[in-house]
Length: 153
Image (cartoon, rainbow, N blue to C red; front, top):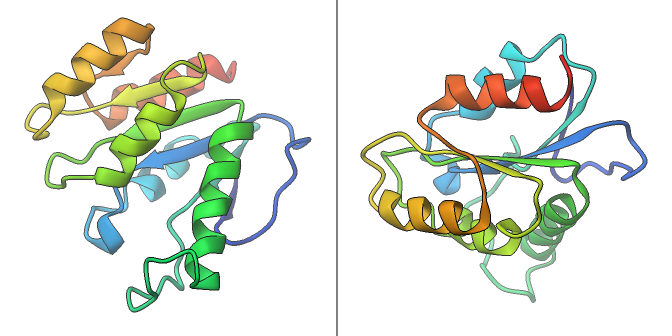
């Protein structure tokens, strides 16, 4: 699996693209993306990882902050164009941006969600996923298996 981290460019024409949506919490969430990518190293796909090593929490959360705006636009582009959106909710986080992203792509048919028990809004996820036919998986291992199944590896 090839990995492209924000803010690096990528082409929607790349083979299979998997956007890694999910808990980051300004770096406070466990780096689940690394575990997922390592487990899928043999898969012929490109992972779009919004967790960037050079993130600076001092950037103003404003459209007028170019680096912040570029980050959000990179993520929106990934959500819109990826063949598959793999979303993970870390139970130790609140993940408001991930909840927002869930709402943006729930109806797309390209979303798979993993949410272990203990996430503070798991009930909301259960209802949304059931309503829109989104697979809701119990943990990261199940998400990895689902990505492998969806990408044919």
